[in-house]
Length: 133
Image (cartoon, rainbow, N blue to C red; front, top):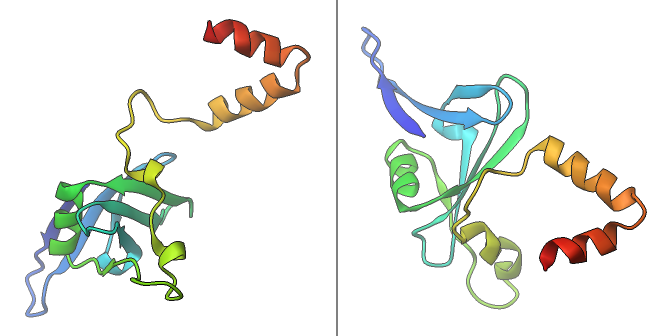
């Protein structure tokens, strides 16, 4: 994640560009309106998402404090969770898993397909139990 200003030689305000990574296309450039930032209850961490301009994949990633500050300084508007019952707070709050630290490589489409086929094979539960021991 990187943000910089595109300094053209005209009198207009330079447009901020944000560099992000699409898992399929690699590095892409976005403008602040193309990025959505959703903050957690405390407003320090959250998620950001964008639609890849090359492949149209919706990409969602965790945003730690540094990323939140970087996106906000680049002009990305943040959405805070609603407060109180009946105001949509349940819908707006991030799942706890989204803010947990993750170790190891991210799950790929191939991993997901392998898992699907494993679940279709006979004896998968016995193999799972044996692997857990």
